[in-house]
Length: 128
Length: 128
Length: 128
Length: 128
Image (cartoon, rainbow over all chains, first blue to last red; front, side):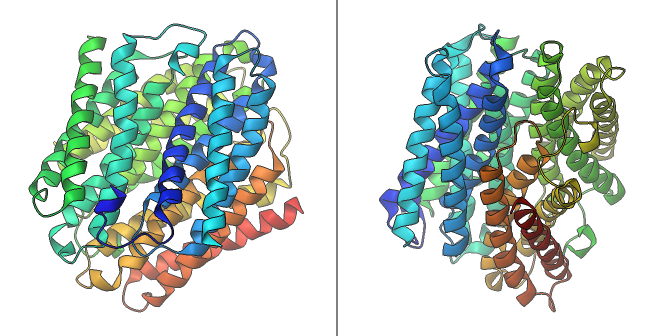
């Protein structure tokens, strides 16, 4: 879709594409992980995981939409958005990591968070 | 991720998986199409396309989240949600179709809408 | 804001305004109730409440955005959206009601859900 | 609703409440302004306004949800989120301001953006 845009991309488009994909993937993983947590017997241990997954999903979702848009892009808005998303992914990934050995959904979600954190940081670097 | 959920899926899971993927894909396509429309010279012809893409993206996004959740699923909520999503995809797909020969992003978006409409209808059928 | 729109409203605007306000209010209440549930000692009794509040919040949020938009409105999309929202509010309101005597946030959330269900149904009636 | 939460607020609650209200209000204003822009004759002058309103609405919406949540709050995530929201509100408010004399919806939206920027910055200050 990005190539079908009438204008050019604001920054290097490989980084943008990877970021869009990772944000949508991470939003989905975090929604699924928070939901799976709700079905676990040890839910009492997973409260922080649920909370952070909900936050991370919301922020990844907003970030995916904002990074997808190419018309009249504002680099300040883009930068602070992906920076915030990277922090949410780092904190959520750390929490999911703690439960990765007990819950496969936490292990998978931690991976999505790591990947999303990395590509968000790559976009920050590409913006300069 | 769905297989990592501690409980079983509320309905046949292949239909759910296809629906989740199609909703996330269509949300992304509609966000990108609305944005590309904003960059086109004939934007005056694309107002309804932009409007419907924004609606369809919002509804696909909510639907993707709701269908992703497996814990304590409510089939009434699930049914009306995917039904609404199917209608939004049909109407948006029809509009994008009208511009498909002029704009590649509209052609791609119409395809995403059609696929999402189909899988949403398949989930409605699976719910019964 | 609605009065500042260059075109007229697609349907009777008092119903639309009430719907927009109630959807934003209910989205906020459901987000807060799901979060408060996560902090309760009897969280095991509140799993379905959390789940339905997350769904209802997502659908109210999408509905609020769609009803807010007045340009090139499509009545089919509008109708199925508010219909779906009314169902989500009814089911979520019923569940919150069950916990209203134990948790003030559930009592308040049930009220928001009832109000939102009512105004969504009023919009459906206004569309005809 | 915040007072009905079983735990205490992570930071001073008056700032949080003001932030939640302003974020929901700004999300709604930006959605309405982008939509009203689409109905204006001088839409060609409003492309950047539409784009920034869509971004600002998405970020305000995610921020409102994240700030609403009190259970197991993470101050790093909270801080970067409200910081990003403040930037989006500043940039969007500046753009809406440029059209405030021609379009009442832009004037109202600029006001919502300013208020939201201020309260987001107040939350950043309260976090310290």
